[in-house]
Amino acid sequence: MYLRCLFFALSIAVLSGCAQAGQRPAAVAAIEQRQAVTILISIDGFRPDYLKRGVTPNLNALARDGIEAPMQPSFPTKTFPNHWAIVTGKRPDRSGIVANNMEDASRPGEKFTMASDDPYWWNEAEPIWVTAEKAGMRTATMFWPGSNVAWGGNVQKDWPYRLVGGTRPSDWAQFNQEISGVQRVNGILDLLRRPANIRPHFLTLYFNAVDTAGHEYGPDAAETAKAVSEVDGQIGMLVEGLNALRQPANLVIISDHGMAAKSSERVVPLDQVANPADYRIVESGPYASLTALRGHEAALEASILKPRPHMQCWRKGTIPARFHYGTHRRIPPYFCLAETGWLIQPSAPAKPFAGGDHGWDNRSPEMQALFIAHGPAFDPRFRPPTDFANVDVYPLLARLLGVAAAAGDGDPKALEGLVRK
Ligand code: AMP
Ligand code: ZN
Ligand code: ZN
Image 1 (cartoon, helix red, strand yellow):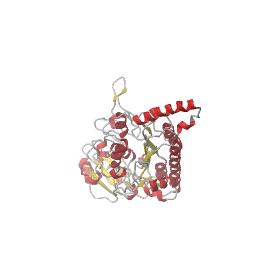
Image 2: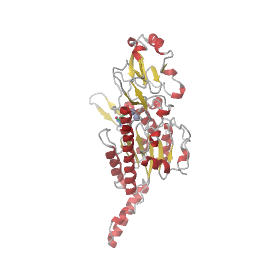
Image 3: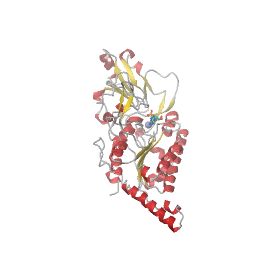
Image 4: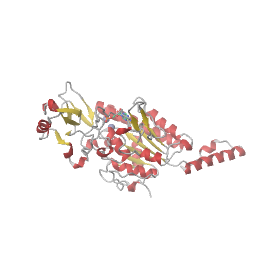
């Protein structure tokens, strides 16, 4: 921060010097030596093998000159739990964001959806931008799940209904899918065009187009490759814009999970496995989470806990340890996971469908996530450990920003060698 102010002051000094000497102030722009910023970029649903489809020249160049490796997402392989794990270093079971849709016994009648910004749901894990802001560093988000939340605050439910306290990034924007990828990139570049005293040092950028196409058409479709190519072009625009500004940047490009093909031919209809009078479904799809209706626990357990084709169910406390999932109060009492590519649905599909989805086993090859690091802070000779976890990214970000990392689920050693000494 101080360094940047110094450069700003120097620029002004040079500007007046130039003016006195009758030179053009245009020379000044080249004088400010910008400090490297960190930009965390998420391409939702980008499977690492999309890099091999011949449509990603910009990402391939960053991978070639930087570091690229597949990264293991956290379980469940859904958008909100994984984005929150990356910026907090805590897996969903500990971060509070255990799913895209949640219930909480402490908030009867309320439901968390991807539109929920009540800090209550988010306050269990501090995101890196809050840590940075508290340390006096300016941050900006051009979307990221949870970045519109006044973190640490609370909503006073009694009249007058109002939000009390909390910290947001200095610059943030309400998520809107209609804001194009190009507009998002221009938003980031505009933030970096600001005078040094109000310029962010840490930024996030989020693209949904690849995930959206992957859901609609499936991971192998031409339409998905087109979305991949478009986002790659927008990454190219960002790199070009940064170069034009002479803005050095450490880019950490990730995805939250991969994508697998789905089909109406691969559905487990729950009402044919158990008696619908015994349960209520909280979420369904690649996994289903259920509660038993009062007094129907034994009947439900008798039908779902025995081996079933294409899916396995557990009481929440007995989900295998490798998933690190099942202790949080927001996880419903019963959890069923489908074989990758299969869906658990309330009943048999009424009409045929295809496309893609995610949420399955975080060890499935199709669910693996993207990781690319490129910038002056990184040692391109570094090779990340195989299957490093997305919670390992948080200590890396803390290191890049020079803020103290909170104790989390990630291994601070996993990506330690990535940052040059
Ligand atoms: P998923 O259902 O896991 O595939 O979620 C992906 C979707 O999450 C995207 O297509 C977006 O519409 C939505 N999304 C992503 N970021 C946000 C956000 N910050 N706020 C609300 N919705 C979001
Ligand atoms: Zn996602
Ligand atoms: Zn998705």
